[in-house]
Every structure is written in structure tokens, then in C-alpha cells.
Length: 269
Image 1 (cartoon, rainbow, N blue to C red):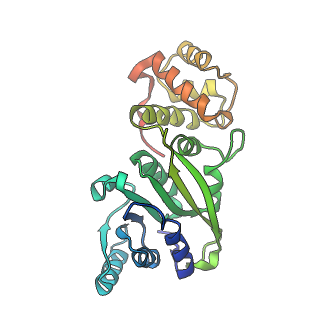
Image 2 (image 1 turned 180 degrees about the vertical axis):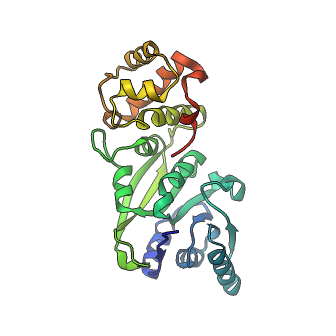
């Protein structure tokens, strides 16, 4: 599956230390792999619920936890589809893990939507850059804007390829996301997410054309929504700020209600 397992216990210890002052006692770990981070978290006194897609690795971590008597529950499944909220109440849980490169974006989207108080995750360095990209930067994406709407973020440290087995071709970074007191949630979050998927689904186009393709609105309704939000139609999706995206999402829904969104704008990455 193209996985790169964390093999350096010093990196695992630094990640565990990054959650040491949090009040939550449960860590939902995505992709425990060979159990390096799992062990560091339990050594730090955390209870761990680990979700592993690979059957052999799930059995390995389960056996490791059994030998050590550690407070670990291993769930075999795909963290992109497993009922994560059913495993541990998000409000009382930290989201942690060495996220697989191929699945980091959908996993981060799930974490943002479920409302975890904080997350400490390792991602490809380019993904870390995307998460903090300001308006106008090419790396800025729908995930960037969702992150801004929900969490403050800090890049804690870089991780070299030598810390993994097998060794990847890229550097990684450990980031900490902390939920904002005014984080968007519920219907407001869902509305913003639909607007972002509609706009960034055609990111090479200006907003006018992107929304004509990405929503079910007529050209006239798209123009009215853009005008109400104060967004010029020729601007590219990555140039809009969070405030502009939020205003546009409201305006699009006011123009078309639930019928403003194409079915494909409700799903996907």
C-alpha cells in the first residue's frame, strides 16, 4: 500500500510529548504500522485506539499490546470509512498518527469534520505546506480553507527519510492542529465544504466558470451569488480568503437552497 513505517523511537517520543499537556486521555491513532508511536503514547500514559487497514499489522500491534499489557484497542479497518466517532467520543479524544501519504487529505478532512479538540499528525512536508498556504499561493486548496475554519496550526518539526522503513523519497513534518473556539461546525461547516468542492473541483478556471460547472445554479444565479459575496468572477479559487469563501458559500445557498449543490459536490476528496 506504499506505506512507510515510523522506525525511530526518538521521533515517536517527540510526537507523544507534543500531546503530553492535553487533558484528553484517549488517542485515536491512525495507521499504527509497527507500533512505534503506539508504544510511545502508552508509555506517556495514554489509552490508544489504533485503526489499522493491514490485517497482518493489526495482529502484530494487537500481540505487542497484549505482551506489554498496554491499554490499546486495535481496530482492523480503513480509517477513511470506519465509524471513528463510534470508537471514541471525538470531544474527549486526540487524533494522532503517521498518516499514509496516499490518504492524508481524506483523513484530515474526517478529523476536521468530527470535531477533535486537537490533532498531532505526521504528513508529507508538501501537505504541511498546503495546510498553511495563504491566499494566492498555488498550494492553497479546499483543505487549507477547511483547516483555517476549524483549527489553528503549527509545524512542530521535520522528520528525515531515515526515520522510516522503507525509506521514502520525501521529507515529512509533524504538525499540531488545535480547534478554535469559534470553529465552524454542523450546517455551516457542511455548507463551506460543499462550496469549496464546487470551486476547487475546477481550480484552473476562474470562480465564475468553476461555479457554473460545480453547482446546479444557472449562470444568472452564479453571478448574483458572486456579487452578493463581493467576489469577482475571474478570480481563481486559491486567491480567496476564508472570509470570502464563507460569504460565497452563504450566497450560493441563498440563491439555490439545497438545490444549489450538485451531488458530486457532497462527496469525494
